[in-house]
Image (cartoon, rainbow, N blue to C red):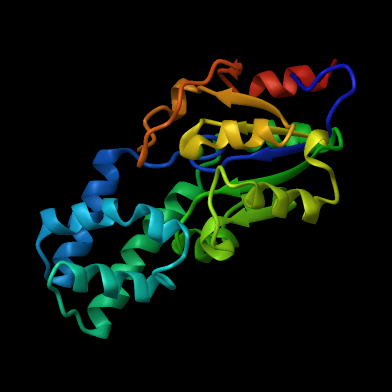
Length: 232
Ligand SMILES: [Mg+2]
């Protein structure tokens, strides 16, 4: 799908594409642990974390501590600063764990050695930018577009165009690869990107926060297919 005239810029989704996104069980378990630290109702806290996904990835709830404080308040809690700091560390630890997964290292390294440039376009909340620089990904990825920092999320064109502008390429010169969350494939396709869905059995456990339309375009089942195509 990179084609006879290779597009040497690839925009990737992050969670469920380059690293796991965490399963629903893992994410709900984390929310339970945070609720216990914050001394709020576990079930209500799990629900409010899920219900505020859109606001959190748009960054409208502020930074990580502000977000946790507001989430607790929304379910009737009044945590002190120590409790908020502990819950923030739980959240950061979870995020760092996801971003330390090395599943895609070799694929990206091989593509990098062939002259490819990479951007990340991800709907994420405050803990991802905070965890980013400690991840191996920050050494390999050239440009990041984090929704919570930009205030805009996929499939809005602006989040993709922020990445392409930083990479100094036109959208039509890019490949977009993602597992399909946030209807990201449709947004990329609309901009003229060569768009491919990644359906990797090793990453299918990733939690989905919102409904995604059916994709009838190109599909790959491993980033290894990208590496193979890049040799042609
Ligand atoms: Mg994803």
